[in-house]
Amino acid sequence: MKRLVLLGGGHAHLFVLEAFARQRPDADIRLITPDALTPYSGMLPGVLAGHYTSRQACIDLRPLAARAGCHLTLDRAIGIDSARRRIRLAGGGAVNYDLLSIDIGSTPQRPDIPGADEHAHPVKPIADLLARCAVVTPRAVSVLGGGAAGVEVTMALHHRWPAARCTLVERGTTPLGGLGVRLQRSVGAEFAHQRIDVVTGAEVTRIDADTLQLADGRTIASDFTVLATGAAAPAWLRNSGLALDARGFIEVGATLQSTSHAEVFAAGDVATLTASPRPKSGVYAVRAGPPLAANIARMMAGQPPLDWHAQRHALMLLACGRRHAIAARGGWVLKGDWVWRWKDAIDRGFVRRFDPQADSETAAG
Ligand SMILES: Cc1cc2nc3c(=O)[nH]c(=O)nc-3n(C[C@H](O)[C@H](O)[C@H](O)COP(=O)(O)OP(=O)(O)OC[C@H]3O[C@@H](n4cnc5c(N)ncnc54)[C@H](O)[C@@H]3O)c2cc1C
Image 1 (cartoon, protein in one colour):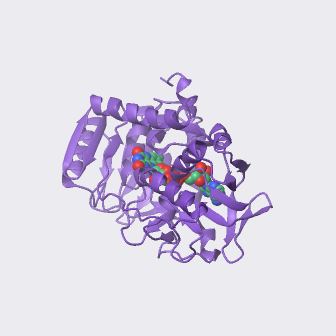
Image 2 (cartoon, protein in one colour):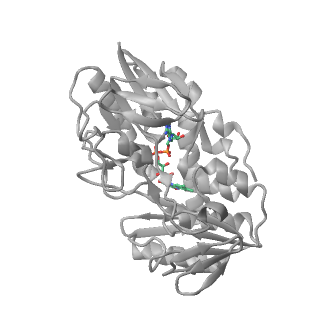
Image 3 (cartoon, helix red, strand yellow):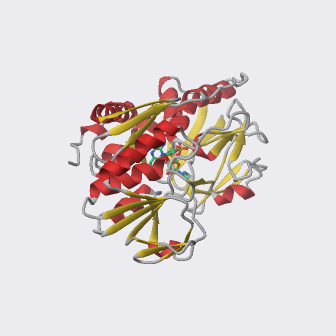
């Protein structure tokens, strides 16, 4: 019997498990992931803001794996030997595979700034950030990085601690650089409305316990600093023998197979579609799920995998801390409390699809 390993309980693998629950392939299937509860990215800012409990924003992989006839190993990969088709685990063991699918996400980029390790908190793992948030009441909060996650986290933390001064710190000329001007304006207006400071052109040179030092001499008060400085690939992939892009993410073709190893699939943040790279976002990890499931099943059945063409534009729904959200797609932008309710319905529906138990909890407040 062929050994299929699903590495990581990420968004794309939820669809693979769901598909296997409907039609089980004739294989020995194993899911390896560190935690039984995997967080759903769309609801993370809502957890920080206090709208959801962390359980409401998580999917329990245990029943999902059981329905798919999949063994579950709660452990973390620390190496892959693609020549020997073997995965090394943090717990000391090793697992061999005939077919491997990798959906382990990304890790926050750790900027090389003095003081970052001691005084700043990365957005991921979200459980660590939440644990930290639970034991502090800061006077001045700052978030480094003005991408979508940084923007949402800033507003979420402002909602959580309304009395704290809140600052978004961005190296470029504007938050959400590279995204549409109308979206940037809409977010700028929301920040002004909430009296959140935005500091651009900011090269942070030092992080202390209660200040950020910028290269141009400015200082920013901050006794709670969060790093939302972009996604990096797990460093251990560099020794895997798999073809990687310049940033260390796994290169995959249109079938989601590694460009160097046909028996390895990868999807979500950890993968880069060589023909049509897309942003590292949950939306694309979700979109890759059904084609990934179909192609793994085809490989198991001895059929050739099919090409997948990731859509160019995706709907972006940005939570604004309070129960208000901004929607953007292509050139259009909409905002309102009703957008938040729409987003809330989409997000809860997603989690309920894979874990009906998650939503049975009452909201956090
Ligand atoms: C605060 C925040 C808010 C965000 N908001 C949004 C949003 O609103 N919309 C959006 O589209 N994107 C959002 N993102 C981005 C989004 O989180 C990621 O793009 C998305 O989670 C990627 O999905 P994935 O399936 O690649 O990996 P993940 O969802 O990160 O899942 C990876 C899984 O692999 C497991 N894993 C990790 N390492 C290993 C290992 N070594 N061995 C085995 N298993 C491992 C993890 O435990 C996890 O279960 C946000 C990110 C952050 C930090």
